[in-house]
Length: 141
Image (cartoon, rainbow, N blue to C red; front, side):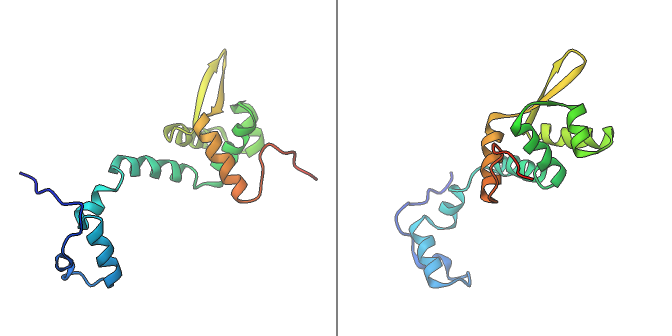
């Protein structure tokens, strides 16, 4: 049977084997100890999902594609012209973005039109704003 951890303060002596500052140990006592702390963590699959998103955003080409698709949905021909990349490399980058759930492609006749997912739109716009750039404004020359 699993031992239940009381949510009240647990004895400080439980952490004496750890070489940690007293204020950290006291804080651990008040949140239920190490077990209480671990219980407050998100599940591991969420970390894996976040890792996929962050890795997909870790390449300047993919960030540029996300910025383009935030402005409007596009076919591969237009994306290829702007990012100046061979079909196979562009396909690689689009696949990474799709696997991370950041974009989706819809078949329209002979073309696939790529668009950013709604959650990703908000995320990308917020990230660019952090760097002082609003994707919805026109770029000055």
